[in-house]
Image 1 (cartoon, rainbow, N blue to C red):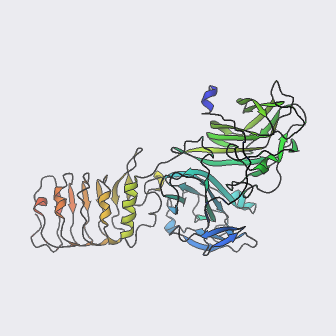
Image 2 (cartoon, rainbow, N blue to C red):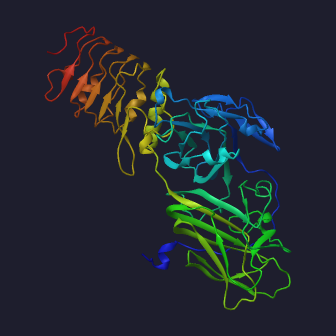
Image 3 (cartoon, rainbow, N blue to C red):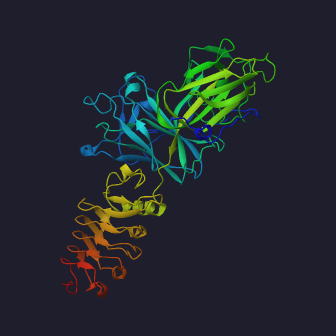
Length: 521
């Protein structure tokens, strides 16, 4: 069905350059060579080994000859007992509120052995947001690596990037490299990064047929792929300065333009593949490449799938950029550039970017995350999947952790019964103030029972069949919501608090301990 034009996008912008741009330093951030054991310098930039960013997985070296250093090692994540729906996460220190370009690169190299000649298919996640499916099969069949780019804003002092096994395939996920680079505040700033992120679909320099344009040509090390069409290619006589250009594309993309041979419309099939139905951020870049035409003589109209995108765009050697931040697309996409009624010049285009607009999945309440991390640290053998956000995405919650629905995500129960846990109960468990149930029975937990009086909603506390010592905290008797308190078969001593004996609505089990007074009947 047709839609009113204003529903297709939230805003469109033009931008013109003002100052010249001088390339100086590489983009700030992290270059992580996954699976590497030592730092290396490649093209003057330092790549770090990944050991300080992740605690899971196995470093492996590929035997494929001729690989660049960042593809010659991978970190592989063995799936014990084919335990799917687990995530393996890199935790990286970041600047809160900064906008990061995140790029993950994958080259399989047969790392999973002869039984798995094709790469695994799995998910990737940033914090609590599902980013994309990773499927490198087609590229690998051509002897190529695959990369994915996204733009995310740091919501805290760390960002968590995970690869996550799913049910698509059963072989072990892996990753070759992870890059996290800070973008300028003005880059893609029409996106509401408090609620959304961007997943790169395509970024092309039209008419360019060389290698990928990247740093040092692009100061943020974005990748601009070459793209050729069966239309005219013209070299530019004037290259615009780009420092004031919206999104600061590299000046190199303006060296060549696609154009028509005469005064007629030009059609591009871009991106050159079918798109899933979604909402997209689209940016197109133009600069008049001639020096003989009079001012304002090249004017174009733009349509996407025959829907007006922008009208009467005046092109000059100073350049222009046109944006739509909310544009629904699906299937193959056609971009039509036509001479406007008052134009004496042929249409042209230099570059384009298109992103899928991702709605953020949110984050678990910070207090709960900290409490669970401290609990994890107090255990000598925590569950292997206790990495990343405890609750999000919903398909990848931590083992034994149940979370609330809605925008404010809290941990509402812990059930780690019979998991053979060793260690003690961190007092931080009392900071999980939304808990209504704790099931930790049939483990080998030692130490004392911490003060849990802050858990006002707690109804069930099962700690039986462990090795807990010390006395029963009297504060348990003050917890009005408590209905079941099972403490049998531990090494508890002292007296059972009077407030727990005979209290209506509370079932207490304490047999199999070393109390100075008998347990309640």
